[in-house]
Amino acid sequence: MAKLDIGPPDYKKNLPPVITKNYGQWKYHDYVKPGVLRHVAKSGDVLYSIRAGSPRLVSNDFIRDICDMADMYCNGYLRFTSRNNIEFLTDDEAMIEPLIAACEAKGLPVGGTGHSLSNIVHTQGWVHCHTPATDASGIVKAVMDDLFEYFKTDDLPARLRVALACCLNMCGAVHCSDIAILGVHRTVPVIDHEIIRKGTEIPTLVASCPTGAIRPDPKNKSVVIRDESCMYCGNCYTMSPGMQIMDPENDGIAILVGGKVSNARSLPMFSRLVIPFLPNNPPRWPETVEAVRNIVETWIRHARDGERVGEWIERIGWERFFTLADIPFSDKCIDDYIFSRETFRTTAAFKY
Ligand code: SF4
Ligand code: SF4
Image (cartoon, rainbow, N blue to C red; front, side, top):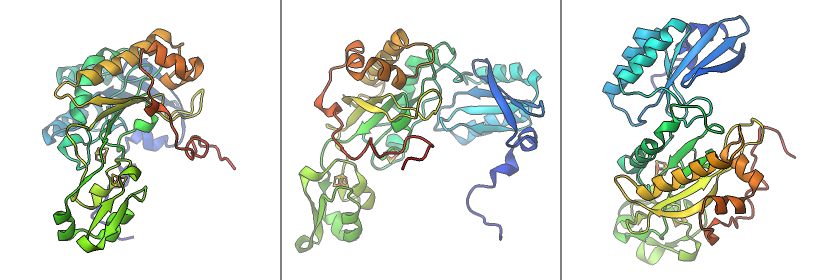
């Protein structure tokens, strides 16, 4: 096949030689200390990964710096995890401590493995995207500053995965994280008929609405919205900037808990809504920071060893969770979408 000049290169070309040699032949991995994993192959070969936090939105200079560190300590091999941690990969045990020292000297904390808080995965926020109901990096910075102690130690009851998505299109992992911070719109888009008339494909715009709330308005060469059918998803804004969804007064944050991807001990779980609305309050988002810390500390106080947030809540019951965490229950927490939980596949196993 002809070589293309677009798309990523074949990842196998960039693997460290020890991974290429032992591809598919790894026996187990264990934790050496916070931030350091050891992977052992059937052949006896060993690979160490040293995990450091990253700020997620990074500059060219930052990438050059970490590449220089990888060149110096691990033959240039590093990767980013799905939660935006940087992992330096080396088969030379003697490089672990110098690499950790170099990371710390650059201000990159080493940790996030085992029973600790991993980097918070997040989306684009006000910096880049067009439909955010909240910011991304700013909130994550404030929350992570507050929970930082849990990144560098591994004595939590279990892994702790926090995610942020700045709208419910959810480019983050909020559906499957222990604690999820989700940007929510709460008002129907305001239509700018002039913009719609100037350059919107009306059939595409109508088709973009998942609830069928948008109808053509041929007289005006525009559209109308049936307010009671709108779920404030912002999908229509993607089709036309004439469907203004942003609302500074009413946009904000919802908190969900109890999701996980892992198949270990229990099936993967979806997160569920526990706090329907917190205001956008930059630059330090105190309400959100406090809400997340409260949930983390309640979990630490009451969970058994090895219990993820969702597993703990399933054991004690959701009612008790709301009591222990002192979170008021709201009718917004009731999932009345009758087609979801019974039919969603949440495991790798087939269901007929
Ligand atoms: Fe954009 Fe929504 Fe993704 Fe945020 S979660 S980057 S607002 S699509
Ligand atoms: Fe439809 Fe979503 Fe737009 Fe509401 S915000 S009109 S539900 S596409």
